[in-house]
Amino acid sequence: MGIIVGTMALFVVLSVFSGLKVFSLSFTNEIDPDLKITSTLGKSFLITPDQESKIKKIDGVASYTKIIEERVLFLFKDKQQVTYLKGVDSLYPVVNDIRKKLFNGQWVKPDTYQVVVGYGIARDFSMGVLDFENPLQIFAPKPGKGAFENPEEAFNKTDVLPVGIYSISEDLDSKYVFADLSLAQELLMYKPNQISGVEFKLKENANEDAIRSQLESVFKNKITIKNRAQLNESLYKMLNTENIAVYLIFTLVIIVALFNLVGALIMMILDKKGNLKTLFNLGTEIKSLRKIFMLQGTLLSVFGGIIGLALGIIMVVLQQKYNLIMLTPTLAYPVVFTLENVLIVMTTIVSLGFVASLIASSRVSKKLLD
Image (cartoon, rainbow, N blue to C red):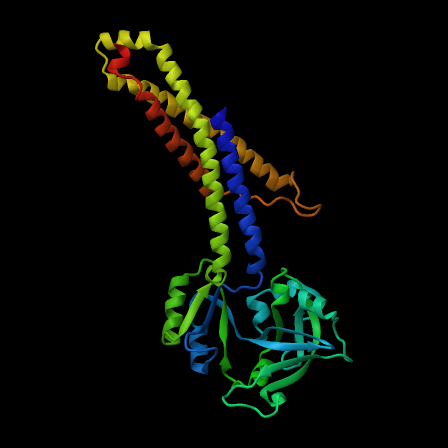
């Protein structure tokens, strides 16, 4: 019973944390591309028509979008905030399905002074959409060296019109203001082919390593390429660390349960001492006598693990299908059934059960029988 309950608990908790991992990453996956390239030599780089034609020929690339990201100052009425202006071209909604996350309004039209702001920024500014009387002002530092006599000359300024509000997560809703690529280039005094990055959407089952090597060849190794996991490296590390910590804690619970197995086997050895002595006098080796109890303990672990795993799988599948436990009235507790968790739990139980049986069976000795 101890092994069954411990196995079931370990599997259910690992499935819950797998679900929480998928749930947490779903927010970043909404806006992060499959691959993103940036310059290794500075904030921006030039992309030529020849390079774009080579990108289009790369097998596995479904679509790509050119972007510009830069921290600028936003002013609205008497409030101000420094955050990222993200200039995007017309293909951005194809690479990142941002339209689904529009809370209000519409997406930006090409070659216009329209912007889409996050719900967090709109809330902080008490801003609505299509407010023609109160435009949103953007101040971007002018590139170059030297001092300015008049501080106002140090910035490029433009007025833009918020036409939409997006909502993804608390962090992202206060991070980006989306604008047309040409507007960002004009504000930052970039050349028409000057950008800060390219984001890619890959085809299903595309070879990421092959695409990486071809992109490095196109841009002559002057770019940094990151996939979705690398773009959110700290989040992935945190989630994986939590998963390992929970696994170790519940493995400790199983080890405590297996102490009962060790004790039960030792009690059985003492109870069958007379029978063991008879077998020993008939010529059975000590090694063979130990194997009896080692096999019995291992079988207890294996069958206990299988039963516990079966019960855990039933619980996880029922939660996935019928949403038995809810976090909120509309959000079920996230769980994910994976074969990886099944293998981890079964390997843990069988390995620890074998070690526990080995420890218990070592009590069978010539000294005990004498």
